[in-house]
Length: 377
Ligand code: BGC
Image (cartoon, rainbow, N blue to C red):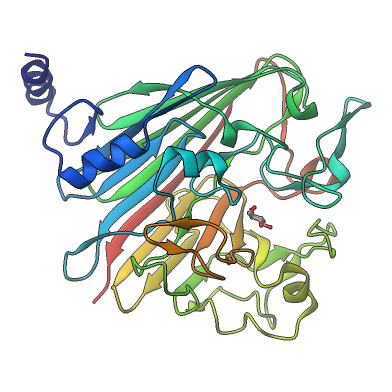
């Protein structure tokens, strides 16, 4: 009866895609196995798997643990659906994960030098969980917590309350992340946050992509274009120096598409510090309609375009993957996934010339990023 009502409702409103709830049908045995593996309880809260799918057959799986994207199934040039994300096989593995696969990171994604910052003359300290620096919001941050879920017809909304003082950041923050799936194979991520005290906000998704669909292969042959004529060079601890450096004449020039692996081993100090690419690129355009990044992979024919309202992106070439993270029947090796973390620049609170990441009471921080998939011949 419930199923009939849902179908009738969808027909009436003409919904083009829908959320499959865990208890609904039309699933394969593999889908049911996966749902079971990703169902668990943590801190007295239920952890579940959710799926969005569209008419073309693209599907995206999520967990309310870390508001994580677990898998993205998209067609290759022959129409074969494959998962283009690195991911785990169970909720237990997700809980134990150390590489931020597919989750939402914040309240301050990326690094803050020594974990220290000040707001209105008051000093704050976030945990130094990455050498001397603070990375991705500290310890047991929102990527390691169970979020509230609201299922809509073509979208799923995750929300979380981050406590005042949690990981050293001031202000109780209400953060919502809405994932929606469009018929043109776009996964849209809408972020919104409010606070009751002045605080910092920089929230992103940390998915690792491998467009071949087979993450036993490296990502070095993927072609990448980044619409950025500048990047933020870093010191040996990956904290920006404050300079916006021209990419022209360096390995960081992705203004015309080139293979990720082409210059990755160049003898440049920035690549030595990053052990490859692990840098923030500064977009030339802030227009959500202009592709900020375009990645293509010839063997599968898959193409991914990234659109965003954010001023930058951390392009991370999977330099710390070393076989310790496992899933999909394999151990993920060096450079088998890349991240495109759309964001404000690292260490912005300590770099007055960078766009601000300050959020004040009464304001709503909003951000949108779209990953659109298609194929080339
Ligand atoms: C950072 C990398 C880090 C990775 C996984 C990226 O956002 O820039 O340095 O290794 O996240 O933690």
